[in-house]
Amino acid sequence: MKISIVGAGYVGLVTGGCLAELGHQVMCIDNDAAKIATLNAAGLPIYEPGLQELMTRNRTEGRIQFTTSMADAVEHGEVIFIAVGTPSMEDGSADLQHVLTVASQIGRHLKKFKVIVNKSTVPVGTAYRVQKCLQDELTKRGIQDSLFEVISNPEFLKEGAAIKDFMQPDRIVIGMDKSPNYQAVHQKVELLYSSFNRHHARTIWMDVRSAELTKYAANAMLATRISFMNEIANLSDLLGADIDSIRRGIGADQRIGHDFLYAGTGYGGSCFPKDTRALIQTALDCGSQMKVVTAVENVNDQQKTLLVSRLIQYFGEDFSGLKFAVWGMAFKPNTDDMREAPSRVIVQELLKRGATVSAFDPLASNEGLEAVKHDTANEAHLKRFHMADSAYSAASKADALLVVTEWKTFHHPDFEILKESMNQLLIVDGRNLYEPQLLQDLGFAYQGIGRRNQLALTFKANQRLAQKEEIPA
Image (cartoon, rainbow, N blue to C red; front, side):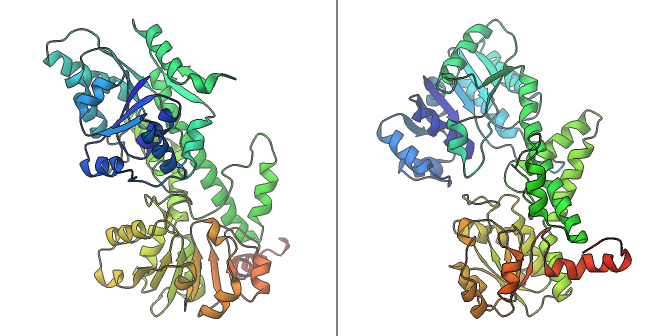
């Protein structure tokens, strides 16, 4: 089948590469000429494990091509995916200007029937707005025939594991409303995704509005698990309990499961923050409130400052003259994505308090530096930040090491090298990578999140034990 994908970003390129891998003839279009030039030169404007190999193979075999011409893309595709960005606006709602602009552009070039697929994450009602943009353009051209059907097909891709998510999906959500073209479009979409339904049906059919809401609901549910566990972890610190034991204890319940139960510095990235805010705003637009989701957002915002709060407990409010090492800038491993990364909040708070910050990330060094430059209005603050070329050089002469992203390369460092190079032996572990007792035996002051360890008991639990003797240590 011939497929066109508008938007050569994260979702568009992963979708295009994977559909080409299934044998479809794919054309990706983007209005960024530099991005298309990079793709035509066998490069990639984003990082995703396995995507470079996928693109190289399918480009060589002639199943994927790249262009800036909307006319060519519309002519090529029987099915046209809209996969452009929907960033948050100031009120948290999704900015649909790119989606609607693309819809109008497609409408200017439509000559025969096409299936238009909303792949971008969009609020309920967007399919109707896309349909109106398309029809308005056709009307301007004097065309009254129905030359399109708009359906919803939200993506469920995790950065760092997107190819596996696409090629081995839990489900494929298709939103379609009844229309004269329903049967023909249904058959075309079934053919498009037939490779995934050979052994058992993964496609879930529903109306368009339900499909649009499904994506937001799924991400809000996962974000809720993260914020819930972070609250339990913070309570564990107050009581001297261990969040890792608690995680295993509740995760063994089949109704709960083990996924998304890890405490940390909060979620980031392009999906959870944007989608929870959009869901909150959608409810407000309807005269309602998403009280749970609003609380999830508030907890997450507070969690991003938790590591700095731990440093304040240890050093006091003023960090002048102190150097802190930050391991990990990207919002999660296996990506260079800095969008909504907790590291951005942490670094800004450290710099504001007078600290010098040396950071290292295995992949996002350039992106991390650009993000800090974007966030830092004070030039004097920026002079106290630099990206190191290795984890150990970042930690050299540091008064504390902050683990912010759980890259595998950080899981088993040489602690003897750290002991020799650090100015003070304090590790604030924002991802609970290390065993508290092991670090303490090696001579480090260790602070995890919700871990039963010396610092947590000293700062919090012992104070409460003194007040409430009935709570045992």
